[in-house]
Length: 335
Image 1 (cartoon, rainbow, N blue to C red):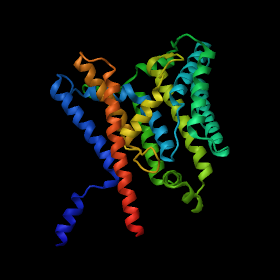
Image 2 (image 1 turned 135 degrees about the horizontal axis):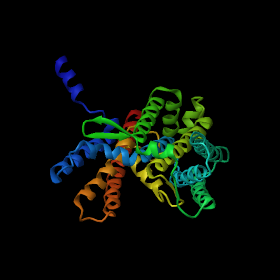
Image 3 (image 1 turned 120 degrees about the vertical axis):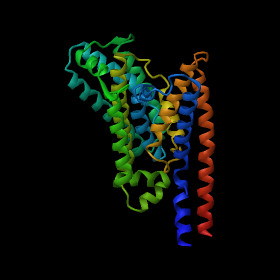
Image 4 (image 1 turned 90 degrees about the vertical axis):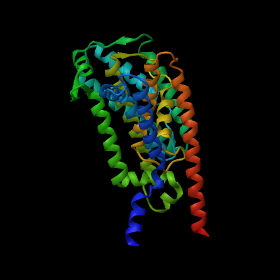
């Protein structure tokens, strides 16, 4: 009897992670479909290219996910990438030390996010309004620097951009990939094993309850936007290294891609639910859809948006099912 119970417990799927299980299964399924349909799709380099091409988006999506977990939103992340690329490109063009340029753009992102968080928390402003204003400000400030593309020819940045790390005989990754995975690992540890992480989930679950428990709600809400600002500036730096250019129209609308990656990755838009690993697979899933379309060669690139839109709809429905299930569970326990 005990053995049968133990067997059932081993086979039982943790329903709290059903969304991320679905995302991982979807990613694996798409990769297998591509491997069957297209010659060369199973190449290790095709897989690592998903990380190389989307390293900046992985970092930005992680920052966005932490904000969403508190029940907030950050619409400024795409514009911040363009702003950071313009700051970095213009400073490098003027001969500023590359290490100092990196430090400056990261500080700009941290300050930008902190100011947004302060305005949201202290003045009780809606995150949509504040971060929308931040989006317009960052995009406009990019054009104040220059309306043209600034090409980066700095030796340090070009060397970082071209540097490859061999991980398999026929596959390599870039420094950007290493940095993005370090951010994922750090965010996972912070949210899983620190008081700050537990407070983030508590705020998203019920902010009033979090206050009654004596948790530092105000400080945490400001810090999550600080973290998002840091991630968007770091993502902007990775994008600048990837493209070796600065332009005010870089990543126009990319904030929607970051939010989509979070939703597909199982982060509940109302907050308080989701695993931080989810956005990583959300980004990789959208990336593999792009790869499938490229390998096909007959489909327009806009089919990527259509496919992502359909996935968003399906995962929002899944999220709604999860919410209804939790509400029924709570009402059953209460009765």
